[in-house]
Length: 349
Image 1 (cartoon, helix red, strand yellow):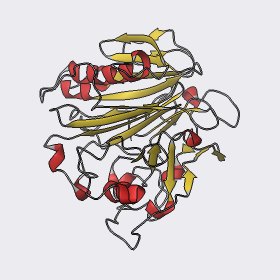
Image 2 (tube, helix red, strand yellow):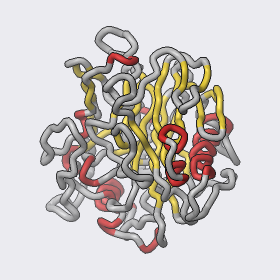
Image 3 (cartoon, one colour):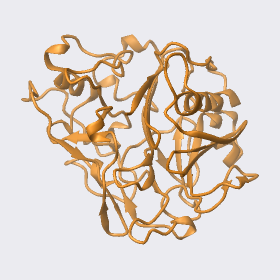
Image 4 (cartoon, helix red, strand yellow):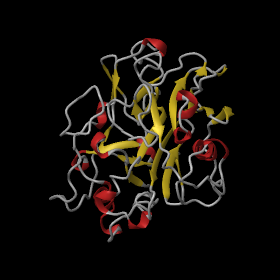
């Protein structure tokens, strides 16, 4: 059974809250992942991942399937300004023998992105995380997969409404772990040789994808690379592309759709080596909602259960629907995602 963890929970560790660039910004990410996935906090039990190794600028975790996930501070990897501690490179690997001197883990199948040899790796995060206490985040996880969503507001989150929620700088979602077929993947972030800023635009598009193995052959992707795309999140209005796209695909704030009594939940599938792959766990899309902003998505999902607009402070609140489960709109760069739904309903895990 997946569990939701939230920045509003009691018992969380103390985070570094400051506008001053520091290694502590990366420590915040480590605290979140360790508390939710490994150790638990307050009344919340951990999701069931294992802490394998950590240092000031890296963290290595393993899920119950025995696959590895590592984050290394972007400062560690690219050796530039301290603000880059607010972002990190995402790695997947099959074994772990130690951390390299440049923040790249050592072991079998180490990969970030799909191009091989980490020439176009994937980064996630932002120096805006916890500039003040208005940062909001949720993490949904079980022992094999987690979905981390962050909204690092730098102003009063309660005052941010309407489309401004979606246009928040560095809003993003990171998916790591098993898909519905057991493939070890990561989705979400920014794919580039090096991050062009310490306040990344975080996409959830067809490009920001990493897979540990080639599902067609079962072999490790490693340095060979693979043609793989998360096409299940492409908007109807967005043409396929081999680079990140800012095509304004999400343009509907209000429409003829005024109530949604039932959901048709479709998988977010991906492609690898020319073949379709199973969808992502805990994530679905309702095609009638694919071009809506986060606020109307939640309002339409909840119907009579809500009578007021959501704000930046409340858009990630964990309010179960009548079936007892939560359904949250995916957050990422508006121009680079299709609207999707994140849920703890075990039917979708």
